[in-house]
Length: 461
Image 1 (cartoon, rainbow, N blue to C red):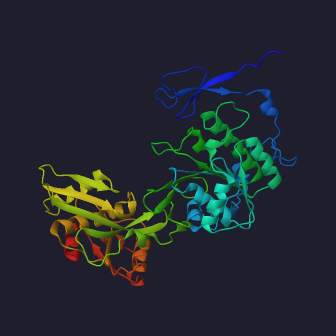
Image 2 (tube, rainbow, N blue to C red):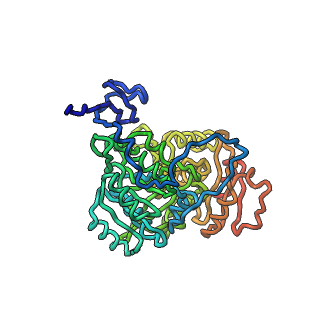
């Protein structure tokens, strides 16, 4: 009997592009030395394999084109995860039949978050498939979380064919895969974690999710550059991409939406890692502002928006004489080029001599702020540190600063003012052009208006 010929192909490890021969430069992403030879097997037996989750009534039928006006609009059926922060980033819940990819650094808490979700869905059958941890390790984590659910099933398996057999028997309402890089399918002969394996396993899970309406969570590894490991096509295949961020040496974690076909991509959720698991932080403004007994110069509070959520951020700055001749400019969590622009505005329009000063700026809480509404808080912090004059802790800022020294209006000013009033601030400084048509009497806070930087200096200092 003739031996079956092994078929190989070359795949780019950056974008997943397939080539029949090795090339030094990828023709798709133009990266060098990224092609790796992998064994593939796309024989007839692949197409003959019956999808275990398919029924006679659920087989795919040929689609016919429809007029756009004839298509009925239906609302997506969503499942509440009983996690307010996760529901927020998903867009009010988990859509049935959706494929959600969660990425993050090792040890950041991805598996803990997914196990908490699995244990919280007590009214739904959840199948937690782990290819990295044993059943005993998952049991120990569940005991540490102090949570229990009779409908949470744990499966230690990496072969997708065996996983679909167990899915057919248990019929879960939600499927969690930890992680996609550990799975392998018999249709591809390359090792688990390779580009072809990740792509094919994700494609099988995508077909399962869409044809059965079962939502699927995929946990994914990330590379040293911080991007999701595997082919870039993986992010295009899934419906939602979530990034779990944070410093493992700090207790706070941020769940950020990178892509979402069923909701906004500007939402984020905040958690605190504790010994009993991840705790939802429903009011992040309180943790982003340090609690101090005395008022210190160089510290101000600014308002920013993350999606539909207003946050109050503490801005810290230190301005001192340059001891080594060349002034230093350093910023953490704030764009360095924008800091240089604001320094130039303060020197040109405000008359503050900052050319011979070292300037250090920090956004408390580890946040990276891109909202221009934080500009005025940064300028006030720099002036406060330069003049060594402390700003009252019950005043905050919400405005953009232009190159002419003018105070510009920002979006969603009502939400920013309401959040400041809720947290007990007595005054907020906003642009004069932001109060048009705004009823200031309904806010339980004094709203001060400014047109230029000179107005702000007179109001605050």
